Length: 368
Image 1 (cartoon, rainbow, N blue to C red):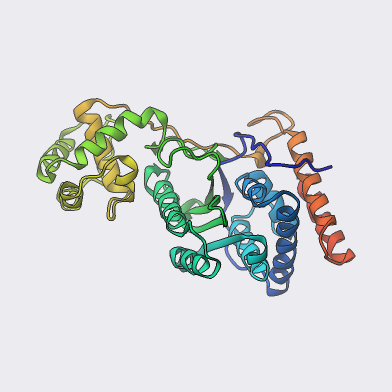
Image 2: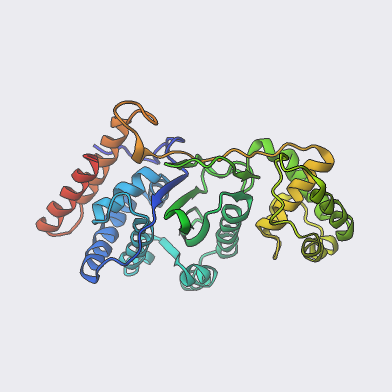
């Protein structure tokens, strides 16, 4: 039987997942079924355990993947992320006010409309946390795009939230040349800081050799130095950046993204409106990945502050193997997820045929 209360997320399974990049759309007949089933499953979870449980589940990439398979999508496809969130959004529309559970955002241009969607939902439902949720939406996107420089560019962003202001974020970045997509999971209950190891964990099938991770605890000193530099006169920082042109190739610095003149122009804003801390700097308009990288390298050069170049991602659940590579399969985790979704499916008001079909897909996921 299902246990009451919020689940305890395994930190090895909450974070990111890297998936092969697939193109195309789910056929209309399938998407209609996915929306219906997604809405019913969410309704059961919220009715049985509350909105916080559903948020916790969505922040678990293993559960999210199994959920997508239950709905009828390829278990390892990048399209699972965009289609599952879209199906949830459509399926919950008729009952979101009743459940007190909402979704904003989506893929491409829809993601850019997330703040406006949150405002609309807030005005319709009388939410008091609208501004906070808009900030969460923008900040999580900026952190994963700029503070963790893994070359994956975000193209999908969804924020899930309830009337109390609890939230989860699921967003996905693209690495087109390698046909891969990396998914990022956030959860309000475990996010103590947006800029200091904000994910419970970061999980992937492919680890990159070199990733500038400014959210790593080993980059904390660098964060403080970067904020200090952002308050300096722009021409002073520009002069220091020009010294990079004289560094030997063996240095850990890459020069291709450094343009002192452009950096000086960008830093005028932070010079006249100094950021209070690193989070405020991340939120500052026009302070993107290149500016943060330049400031980080400058801090390293001047102050000797350490930078984390380790890819924060860990291996994905989808690639565990019975031989223990890259890590052993946790069969108990598999089984618990399957049983939870089975019970949720059985409690829905769907027809017997729909339930049987959904459970068959869930068993196929377990056999992978």
